[in-house]
Length: 373
Image 1 (tube, one colour):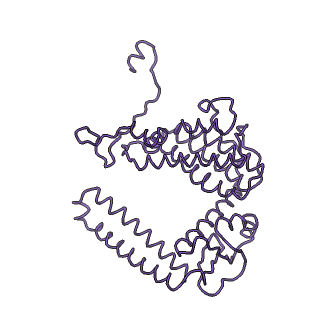
Image 2 (cartoon, helix red, strand yellow):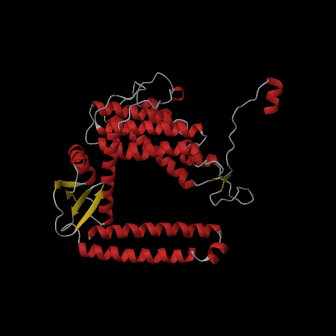
Image 3 (cartoon, one colour):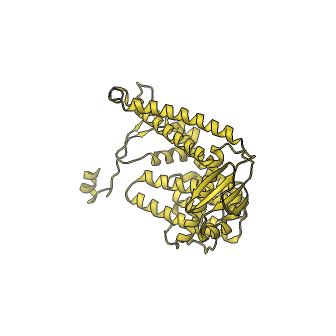
């Protein structure tokens, strides 16, 4: 075609040519009718939707690597589309409408300044990835932003009540999401584009987001700190079998002035998301307690009367010993040259994966034991 273009049109038909990897079966084998491992994409579309399959192909398209067709991953991206739809419904139910401006709204609240900064960072990451033809990096950037930052944190942080500023920022950020996600999931984004408000044009011709909004590094740092603190409290509660409905008091020790100011501003969100009954400043209480360190401050969760501390220590110690035993057994297999050289590559890879999981599990159990003192 290139030669014909030069001969008959005096120009090449394209300036860039992208060669993608081969799509293989889930086990890495080449698809073949004789092997009976051919995957019909139309069947996947009927089951999970065209958007989910399209996003899977983009997210798995790493340069220089073939794609293993994994139905579970396609299903996961269908769930991602469902999460996006539910986010749109939540915004609509709270009076959030389509944004009328390409520029970010003026914002004073740290949580709104944070999501604006994260949106700008995502635009920059996607622009850079697409310029380098890294479709996997671009897809994973928008996936992480939508699932982890916008849905899991921004929406949760604003559930306490939306004012006009938050509605404006949420509408703007969701519009940017629809535009950035459109190349990867064109059908659901086009549908949501029109369901969320009156539009002058179709989404396919909408202006691409520009990374021009001012970034507030202080707001970013504050909300990132809040996310780390809430995550640490939730992890401690789960590891120590604290009943989900139990609200715990928290004592803050060694907190700086900056931490005190942040707690003043974010205390309500912290109490709601971390299920905290009260927040006080002072020395660590006597008796069993879990300790969480975030930056310079220590957050103590008294557990007397909430859980049986002696029984919980015994449970954790038993689970830790079992995890360490399995970890060491797997480590012994992997250190054996005979196993690594003679076993099937899939078996070696599985052993390494299991070893990593058991190592992480042992570290988590040890951390839980350490928290109880």
